[in-house]
Image (cartoon, rainbow, N blue to C red; front, side, top):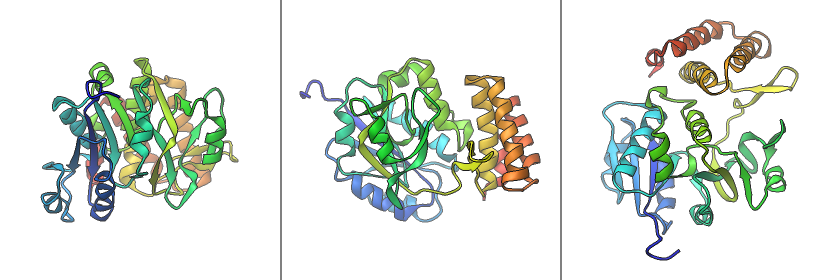
Length: 302
């Protein structure tokens, strides 16, 4: 790539009360020569993050209140684009990209929204988040399965958003910014589906890698192993998931998918992991989403 062709690349990191992870991540980003700027959006952390960022050679902004990952990425992406970024590299504070991750991603200039394979930090032979391979219903958990399925080094149409993903200025100009009101959970999926709807070229670059802490609760098997459910012990995360997933499915997939999600929720908390108290919360969250009320999660903030 010549100097005239070189695009300005800004990394946007969203953080909240994970200072040690942030230290590790920023140390890695400092080793990546392709970056023109690192912008850290601090969601009003209370663990000394804001003070520490003031001593670092990065652009940092501490928000007056916690806006969740959705608010942080919306704010950070808008600021990066308005300050002249041509490409924005989006990531949470708990991911650790390989030293050559961005180099591998930049080898592709035929994509609009693309990112690395996201591997479990505890076992890098496994995916942190199981993915469904394109063209079927096969869900894979092993990195080896992804490598076998790749064509031209890519899994086209598949992406784990906001975990080391690149997005072009051109795509942002077309589809806008993440929905800040989602707070957490589902904002990344909504942005991906919005990009799909706009005809964006989307892919995972198999040779690019990010490590991310895995949790056993994501993708919990249910219905005799025929499907999975994204259970979380956190009431805040569950409320946002039930609300935002209802909104996303209704908008992009239609009512049959909404009803299927509600049926899965009933099955999961009555039979798979009995917790009947989760059902009224799920119903309130879903109803709030359908009414366009994105304030109910605030009661679960700590």
